Length: 404
Image (tube, rainbow, N blue to C red; front, side, top):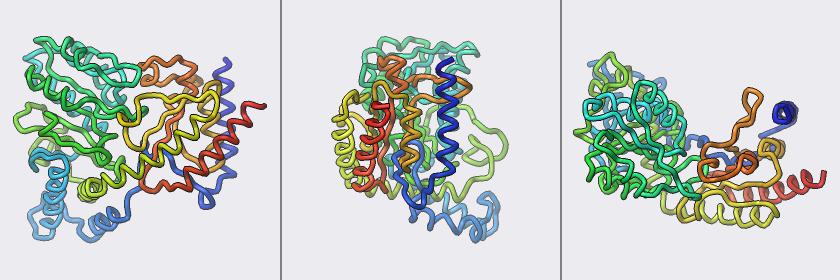
């Protein structure tokens, strides 16, 4: 009952605050892990494909050929970014579809070889709920544990593989605590064991280097809106030779594996966005790490705060997850929102209950700590002034909450 009351107060507080908030006056966006703004360069490149170069790429006219070439060029850009062949890139509606297709498509196509899937307890719901669905169909799922930093032990995967294992699906980097998995080693192990290896790279793509050849990756998911591209477009990399069912049946698009008229503006956008991110990755990564270190240093000076997840060298450059002991995350987030600061929490205020983050629970945090944890994620438009404002505002809010 107490949780329901808190949740109701949070909703009322948010509604009241939203009426007063003027984002034109002040906005500090520290929720890049949820979504990023489309870059101006990407917007400029995709704009003509909405109203000038609108031909259907499946048509035979010379006008439509321009759309077809734009898609061809986008595949080239993406293939170069992750070091694969152009015809190994398939376009989807986003990361969730890519994860669904990779997992369902691979296990259903290869079920004559077994019925076992290996994943972790900290995957995105797009993976976890897909595995749950397959479990209802009779597939066996092993959820290998992670340590207190959110990193999986390679030996756990090795010991979990059986003669019935079809697929291992482990995310490249976690969306809540930013932990980066030993992908190269996992891929090598799967290759040696003859098991298909899929990685959800939605949080990693565009932010840390990815080489599918060097890392022994068989399938990889990504989503454009996580790296300054448009929403509604993603890719699934499928290594040549991997047997996988078609996901959407209909026409011949995507070489007969994913039917439907191509989203040409989105495809152009994801190609341009990944190209830009890879060009600027090294410089931007260092800048982002410095801002994160400053934010972390000052927040962790506040009594009762703790860092959740791995050390900084083993997490995404812009990711920071902090536990504010004794303070409900929802209340803290809404207080920040009233000051124009956007962040996020692993717990959700939904249907009259507050659910602890499955990721934070998996790394050993108590339900109370889970419900007191916030993720800050830094991106390209974050300035040092934004960090300074967040630090001072956060200290004021916490002092006010703890003295009332």
